Image (cartoon, rainbow, N blue to C red; front, side):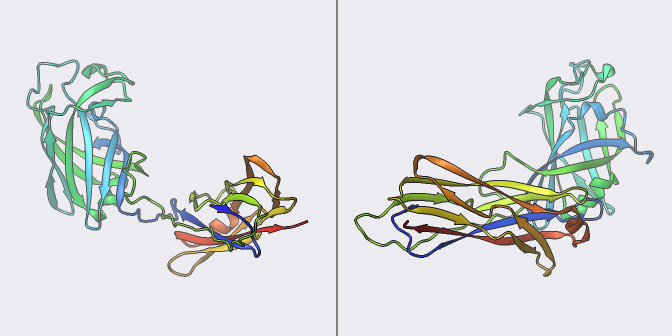
Length: 318
């Protein structure tokens, strides 16, 4: 926004979003699209990967809604060492079992999406780095299955239609769930963002200065670390093409608090301080950073924390 003259400080609010999670801080992800690492483990409960695990692409997709978790995963199709086998699918009759209820997977053998594989498997003719066509498998599971998937305790069975030609049993494990960076704009993500408007009073005078100040509408600090200081850098962009001999000043408080839905608090500091902008036709960057200490993270309850820091923008005639 272009400001002609500021007779009083303009107030701008920048929203800060943060989420703490980890072994002791597991937070429920929001609805939306995610990617994760998938493996198929031996049915004997050893926790080791099954012999069939290398024929699966180890990147899976999870779409979360209020009621369900839709899991999509990929298996090489055809298997490079056996191109003449499994014409109607590398695997068939894929069923996952959650709390005693069976969920059948839908199979797509016509699209043949290409995926990169990351494991060497000489028996199947697959090498790490190979990009192969795949059979796409999708199964809709209950929303509360996430913990079981991460623990690798969701059982599955499938008829392996190549080499083995028999029904094999596995445990399915999905870890490292991350918000999908390819999600369409407007889709829910793991953290919230909030819009901010900068407003100012404008005095209509012929000799008014001309400048523009842009404060970030939101910054996200993501997953906080309890072992080191958490720092998020940001910039305030200023263009001051005509200050008429005056001074443009931007100021922010040096500390504040974030809160979660339960009213828990988390302290942060802001080292922006007070900065002035020079008269220049080019954009100028005024830098600052939001910091949250490891000690504060370790002492805080798990949850999604948000808060506000306020920037004052003022112009004064010399």
